[in-house]
Length: 277
View 1 (cartoon, rainbow, N blue to C red):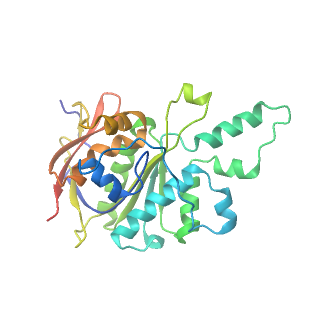
View 2 (cartoon, rainbow, N blue to C red):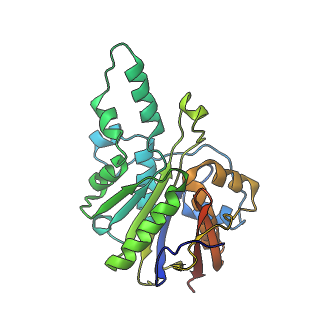
């Protein structure tokens, strides 16, 4: 079943770089091997690197969501061979910094009700975008959005549209981190996961694949694609940003065809993927 079109004529972009970090996944190359069934999927806790690109003061203030976004974004930009300072960006997260939210709730529930300035400025949904600008010196346009569990698909739609309309590469970053109790009981995100894609309207020598969104069929009632590996499928289901895994799996396996991603309740995002030779 298809529903109302999302664009006409088709929108087409090329994937020029990928960044990936999550449970048992240290990089896109590591994740690519697991997604292509060339290495076993692992279940280790996500390891977030130190954000060395930030100045020392900001580095000390950077929480998990900022470290996650910076790590994946820099991976993708480096793979694409582009200058991050000149690259427009789209940041997408289902809920922002879970630990920071928890700590602010704890502070507000205390008799003093005092919130540290660092926690306050890290609480805004565009915090990762701001730290990205500090780390890279970027003054390019940056969009920040949230669509709960559909945030990756929403971010992909935004980034593809910007790349096509502006005729320039765009960096998409989608990321989520876990919540401590008691928030975890109502928002059970178990770990951190982030993905970044450099999307360009023109094919380059390093392009991995072409992604097309067809106006008459990109929004669909068809179910989202599942992953054959039970570890990776569990990851896809448990962390909103990991709803990107069917697309990443197709990229890793250099498999063309239709890919369906979770988006909104009863409404998925369908795209056509064509690997580049």
